[in-house]
Length: 55
Image 1 (cartoon, rainbow, N blue to C red):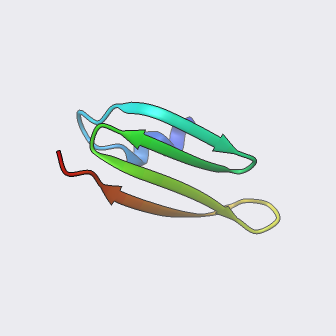
Image 2: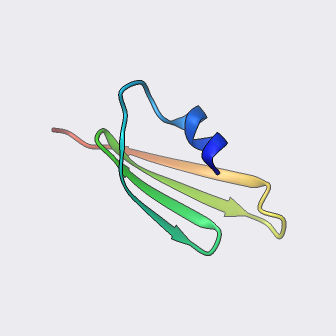
């Protein structure tokens, strides 16, 4: 999962909170909310949802 974070996080983006639920992961960063939704039996397919936070 840490390798996936490197591909998704922007420069100067810091994780504030992380919530792991069975196979899914939700991150709250200083710039946005990111949801990782693993699909299928093996969990190889991952859908990402990114919601920007206006500061």
